[in-house]
Structures are given as structure tokens and as C-alpha cells.
Length: 247
Image (tube, rainbow, N blue to C red; front, side, top):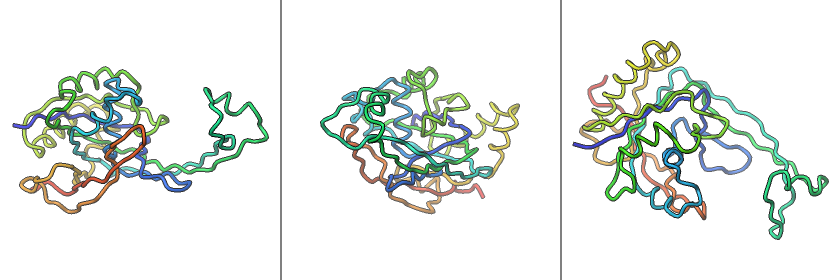
């Protein structure tokens, strides 16, 4: 039997960044692998400059079921001021950065994409030699060390993660999650409405799931962190499809 850690994510606005090129910061409808690793490591209290984070990022698998029937898409517009690049100058605070010479400030324009009213059920599994057990991660998600966000700091979580442990196949884990969270939210009209919407597409990383899922699409996503210090990522495969026999 395979051990799984199941948890939920919901926020009024979510933004799961795609590779940023130019002034538009695009968002995927589902969390990237790096975003989920970041959320879990923040709950555990692992800092970004911690030497163990690169090792942590090489472990664990995630599978995702998004409830997107009632979602909407928005884009907001940002202006940010910053001084001209000067590698010899070190700024310790944002206040120091902008107060030195206001006439040298340059305005940067950017746009950010968000999805509204998307609810997620996440199934997490550990790999061999993983640095933290699923039981340890469950406790961290119940009492996170650092604040947790749905992609960006302006998207705080609106529900507890409510992590639960489960043994079985990935298909069984999703079926269990559906019943469990529907029961949890049957008296919460907003979430209950989302859970009753069509959510028949699943996303997963593990290969050899054809006995339980009908694979519709295989994508390559550049969201596997390999070096936090150098901000480097590599490609990985993402499968998506339907549960067999769910039609």
C-alpha cells in the first residue's frame, strides 16, 4: 500500500507563475511543482537560503485535482520604481533603495494574472530517502512555521489545509479526498458549490498510472527546482487525464 498525504488549497485569488518572459507574469490554472514544494517547505520552516532546500526539492510527488467550474480569470497592472542597476551598491532595505536619489528612479511596468474561485485537492507522496516523512509534513501543514500563500503574497489561504494521511492507490486517494472534503464543507455554501462542480481532470507526476487513469495529455513543465541559489529549474513530465470508469 502507498502512503499519501492529502490536503486542500483554496484562496479567492491564486497565481501559479509560469516562466516569466517580459512584463507579463502568466499564471497556470494549477500549482507548479515548485509552488507546492515552496508551500510545504515554508510550513516546515525551511528558509530559502537553507542548504538543505535543494535536497528537499528532489523528493516527493504531487497529484492535483482542480475544481475550476466556477473560476474566472483576471489580470492586474503594476508599477514598481527602482534605481538604475549598480552592482557596487548594496541596499539593505527598500527605503534605502528609493531615497538616495529620487531623480534616478526608473519605473518598471508589469502585469500579473490570477484565477478566482479555484479549489484544489492535492495528493502528496514521499520518495525514497525523503528528508521528511509524510507524518512530519502533516504536522507542519497543521501548524506552519511561515505564512502560506496561494502563489503570491497577496493571495493568502482562505481555508485550513486540513491534511490527512491515507493508504491506497492514487485513484483511491482522490476518491477518499472527494468524500472527506465534501463532508467537511457540506455546511459551507461557497465551498460546497465548488465541490459539486465538474472536476473530472486530474494531474499527476508518477508514471505507470494507466491502470487507474486515462491519459489525455502529457506536458513538459519547467518547474523542477535544481538550484535555489542560482534560481535554476529543469523540465519534468506532467500527465493529465480522467479517472477510468468515472464517465
